[in-house]
Length: 209
Image 1: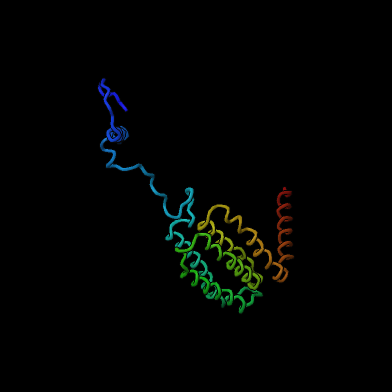
Image 2: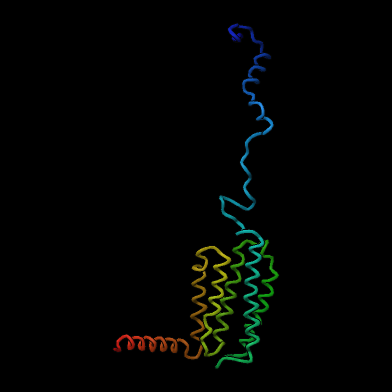
């Protein structure tokens, strides 16, 4: 076999041909030190740019302990205000609800939220709504604070979880809100009557000169 070099045709042995091909495909000088171009590795726990664990562990721990503070705060305030019961309230049942909230808050505080995924903290939402419903059912006829804890619960859900999580929890909250009204003495009837009276009063105010 012959190859042409500088206008001369010379015989090429197999060993010479192998060395010539190696020189031809050799990368430019300086590129061997850099090594092959590699893309940076994806962070652990990420797929397609979406975190599977729901954010850094410190943030998940923060949101878990924030929920614990809400539980413990509600329990402590409720137990402190037991000597000032609302008319028609069941003191024993109300005390049990506040004590359960306090105990659950302590357990939530020490839970390992940093090792659990973010969606795991949604497990505390049903017990929260259950305690709110039971507390409202036995809380007496004073309904001025009936919906306060629902606001607190949805504030935490909005802080700790992605969008539309509150919408997913809305049916459970609606059931916890409505069901105690059937237990309260005249609760549903009184609410409907109060709404009709208020509507009539506003109509009269609009029609009055």
